[in-house]
Amino acid sequence: MISILPHNFDSLFTDKQEKWTLAQTCMNRLSKNFDITETSKPKIDDFYILASKSKPIYFSAWEVKKQEQAFKLCLVQFETSYTTANQFGGSTHTDTSFYLYGQLKIKGNFGTVLIRPETFGDKITELFVKTEVDFELYPLFSYKYFVASDELEPLIKTLPTELIEFLEKINGLQIEFRNQYCLFRLPKAMNPEEAVKLCLIGIELDKILNK
Image (cartoon, rainbow, N blue to C red):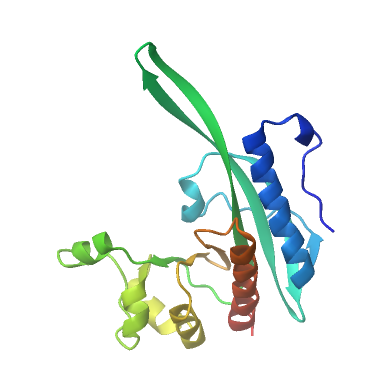
């Protein structure tokens, strides 16, 4: 069984203990469903879906494997600061959050591509200016996902049909390609069920992208 609890766990405040306990619960669940071994930390800080976060204060990585398929799972903890105001002035507080990311090295090279759930704001923007790649042969995919790329037209021809059809079945996934690597996450990954779902997605992505 994988243990990720810090040595000073007993001395932490209750809210931080609860977050570490949830992260440990997620890893326990994954250990029962997949072969997991600790591995080197991949370089993921250049990815856009990570760029909005602050510098990680905790970062561990494991190889998740099921039969012949595998990918790297990253557990990242970020610290954020916020200010509260009252009649006597204000004070600054810090909070921490865990996120799970999957990272995969792939055989192909799609350049720089971001695929994320499309929002209402994206649809409005598209009425006035072309900002994304549209896949006319896959209307459900185009409806569900916002796709941005450094090379719009070539992407339509190079993105595997199997990947598009797989993503049509998934809700909420963010996936970003940077040359021969991709990073992906779900919005509620720090939850045992969502953690398992993320790993199943990673296994399937490896099967599709590394045939």
